[in-house]
Length: 163
Image (cartoon, rainbow, N blue to C red; front, top):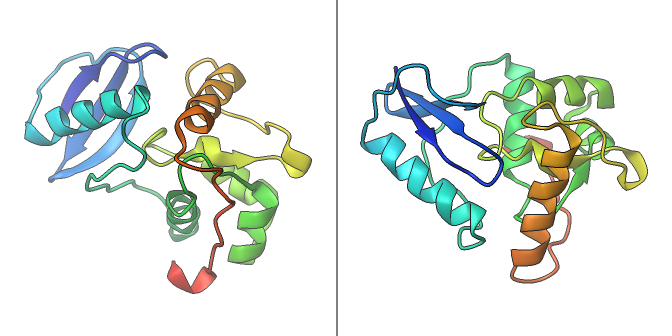
């Protein structure tokens, strides 16, 4: 596995790749950096995202998790930049329960790139966020996207058959 520390407005992030795909984004500095071309591209895209110039990542991803978690992460990737869905919306689309979706959000190994921050609680409440400074980080990411979205992003329409 290779890793690289990427500075961000939210603090340092460690991006990890394995087998030609991104497998993790963690909060904090890498213990041992071993950059590769994919990590350099991920750093470039993250920088563009944090400055509002990139609205969708184009990186190979390989998050490790159960088939259900994979479905939830795929649903997150379908939410457009600047848009949000609720835990309940995703749960209904997948024939599951909101708490199970919340558990998958909390287990997301590639936050920001797999945008778990775009999942909200019922009635638009923030819900939770396990990365960075918690809900402050989630609010910061949502605000960034709302400020830079090309138009008012509508909620994604998730089709369970797509996953």
